[in-house]
View (tube, rainbow, N blue to C red):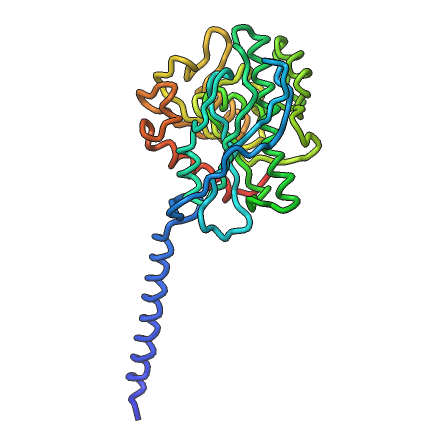
Amino acid sequence: MKHPLATLSLTLAALLAGLFCTASHAEEDRAAPRRYLNTVFPDYVRHGDIVFAENLNNLDGKVEKLTLRVFEPKGDTATKRTLLVLTPGGGFVQTGATWMDDFGEELARAGYVVAINRYRLSSDINSPEKFFDALFKAMSDQKAAIRYFIKDAAGPNRFKIDVDNIFIGGHSAGSITSMFTGYLDARNTVPAPGVAALKSNGGLDGNSGNETLKYKLRGVINLSGLVPNLDMLDAGEPALLSIHGDKDDVVALGSSPAGLHGSQPIHERAKSVGLSSQLQIVVGGDHIDPADPKRCPECLPLMKRFMFTTMQQPAK
């Protein structure tokens, strides 16, 4: 017969082995890449020139097909995936066929579905009236891009979107558009030069398609953007991440004499009303740096962490 102490020793050894095994597995779990925060897919799939809406462009008086490019993880089996609608800049007057594709590629490898949308361009923004007309055209088109996925999710859900986890963002003009899409509502006053432009472009809902479909946003990503009115930002609205170079000579980090407010006062306003906000100042960075992963290698990881962390919070 085994001595009772021997049996106890064997039991203790088995328990310790189990503990160490559990701890080892826990360490492995902590070290494993996490979807939305780290790269978890080796490749992505790019879908180009998907028409999400059509609308008249007052630039040339023609109906324009509005398209987007979608990036998704290759081989992904998840059925509910976070969406980022990303809108490039270009001063509302130009765009490129591959602008910000590098963001789509990298974020898709982390598990996101990324839609990079085109919007109707304008001839110039050389007056307040022209600026707001260009902005509200772009806002109408960005909202139509979001609703394209809302409508699809209620049907075939081709891209397996989780409608409770939708983010928007962009660079420069795309960032301005995103902040107006995310924060302008009926409580806010539109600057006088923009009243007519907002009305002619369908009001707050826009007129680029599926205006009756409702959606909620989890967060907004502002890369080198501005707003003319800080009171657009209110408590309870989508979380905000701002990334801005301190040497930006196109959109000032602070407030300009013309009454335009860059990322620093935007962040301060957000914090003062209790809106979740993060600001990353790129030291030595110019206007382009936040939109160029080679010049700002920390920008994409910041975006991933912002979205990952925001998704851990209860939806409002």
